[in-house]
Image (cartoon, rainbow, N blue to C red; front, side):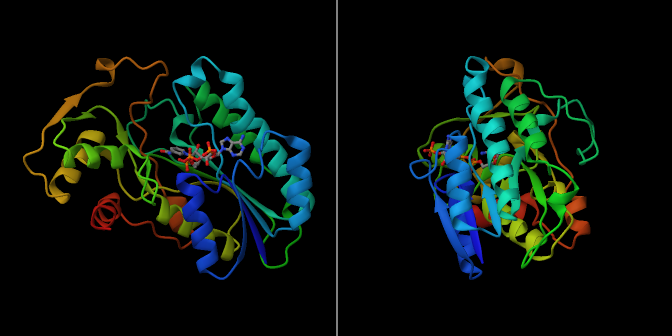
Length: 291
Ligand SMILES: NC(=O)c1ccc[n+]([C@@H]2O[C@H](COP(=O)([O-])OP(=O)(O)OC[C@H]3O[C@@H](n4cnc5c(N)ncnc54)[C@H](OP(=O)(O)O)[C@@H]3O)[C@@H](O)[C@H]2O)c1
């Protein structure tokens, strides 16, 4: 059985490729050089050529602030390319997996968001990701029919504050690097998130498909929530730099072009109801620091 992964060089993409290979699947790992997902006709052609059972889209335009001045670039990757990929997957009879973000919410909640909560994007990036969710939704009832090894369905997994993997590109890795270099770490004390370890996300994705769980939206984050200040404090302790300096800041202290949602904890209870348990953010962070 063949699994196509797009955005295979990304933070999540690289770990996704490894997870599926480790489980014995044939994986076609496509980087941007091999498939620019904004080229619709080529997407149809390349995906069709591999006759995959699953297409997992790990591409993204993630430059949140830049998207304010170039929204069409964000839309091209985060929305229109998703439509091409979803259609190509449907044409091949393949399961389609797409990742979205906590940023689809406005951050005004006082309890973790569930899949039933209404999105209210506050930036061009966030809007492009929400449209991407709509593009990833199945085209119609026929999209649920089919299957050989996997139940034909489309999955939209919302993740947030990704970390882990080899790439060292996440905010959490930047904090760790700054602690190690003796630099002050600035951390929001008014932004609450549910961090997501890429290995846990990749594992949960495989589990969902292998269990033939119903398609739809799932919040796929480590269990629990924390402010960035709490995360920085745990990182300082566990990375062995107890004397390092953390400067707590407010979102209003930092000039950012795109508005960030303030409270973005996501509930992963729906994922848990399928039998998939996500480790707590503390367990995931500890494991990352130790690895
Ligand atoms: N990182 C986070 O904290 C976070 C938070 C919420 C949601 N998410 C979502 O999680 C998913 C994975 O994110 P990530 O952090 O792993 O992203 P990432 O590290 O930025 O990787 C994205 C990948 O997409 C590729 N890409 C961009 N444009 C492309 C195009 N036109 N054609 C083909 N490939 C293209 C990039 O290639 P190049 O390397 O060549 O640029 C890169 O390899 C995305 O859907 C993202 O929106 C991430």
